[in-house]
Length: 421
Picture 1 (tube, rainbow, N blue to C red):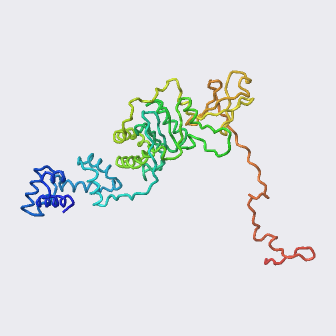
Picture 2 (tube, one colour):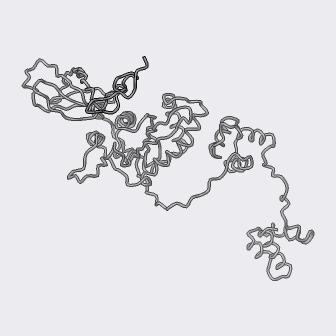
């Protein structure tokens, strides 16, 4: 008997001993008086065994058919899904076989079949959750995750992710080879053109967003990413810890689990195919995991079409034009081609821009200058002395006279070996 049945036994005995009434006993047990009289009648006929539930040991009427469970066991033992969790496995089971089971039921089956083991819980230092922003586009968390996204089918790559703080929805994502300024700029341009300009970006202290120079400087150096956002009136906030931008970090964990497995099932083998699949996955991800923001007001601002985003997200630098109208940049020399007199540009400062394709452009007072790269001729190869350390020593021949002289007598070398000729 369980605790519930033992409590009923004690109350029934009190009623039979007339220490309490049936009405009070029914209220104490949380039963109606009619139900209590049924239990009392069964107790008088069968004794203590009448209080034990008749359902105990009997299969449930809602038990899944054994043929269906056999199909479920065959499905979950597929080696391609050996690392799927109960939640994702339940979704795939319903999509592929049309069988709908709760994740807890499937968890028991997976544990019984040995295809899933619960992870031991680690003691973690508590981090208090920061309240979400109230409006969509008020704060967008950005981050890059280096991972073997295609497992052994391709090399590691970086997935850049933009996550809305108010709703946890993924607003933009893209696979790129490396995490650098140009790749962040390309994804930012796509995001701005599709959704508009957010109020602020929230990132870590990666060198793209903030200079990490440790010298004692009077002013903090400015990265190339900061001026571009400043022109667009988008604030940039750098977090002091990964937990501070937990929404995008948590999204990365989910992507490293679900996205990898989805691409495995679709047999995606290169990152071009992966980028084509991302919009479909993001739509499904947002439908399952995104929440409604507190306010319906969207803080995204419409992008001004007169703003040249391609120009903003270039590397900007300055150079002084020589007397011969030449510019040196990145180890190369460029000649300015113009019909104006040389004194117009000579000793003047010009703006140099370099885009993602490494194309160099020069600007003077907002006007694009025509440049032509000057090919540098290699220098003549220097003559190496035979006494140089780099020169290889010449081994004398086996019959060289140097080998036949030994000791000196009266200052003259004397042969130590005689010729056999």
